[in-house]
Length: 98
Image (cartoon, rainbow, N blue to C red; front, side, top):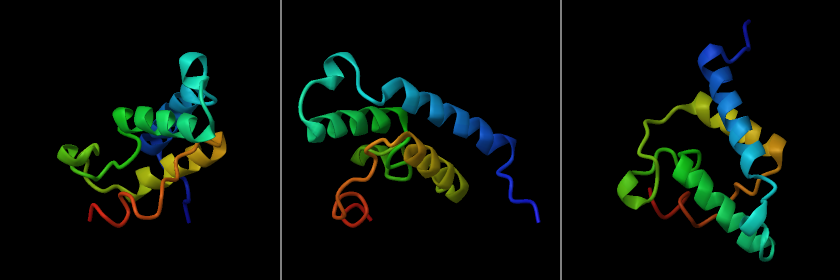
């Protein structure tokens, strides 16, 4: 059984890893404020880059992309590895948008 993600998803992994390295921990003006403010600022950057809320329509603040379970797994793995504050509230996009 081949459990590798494949070239497409390993390329995505590299892009997400680079994004995380460039944006976390926050630097400059992004480093101001408490932990909550830093997390909100990071999430806004991740949303703008299309890494968060990927399948939510653009009209509602998401990226408007088609579902891709493998991409979601890779992104979550890299977010976890980097220790970024990607987890939002339970009632946010997970419950209210659908």
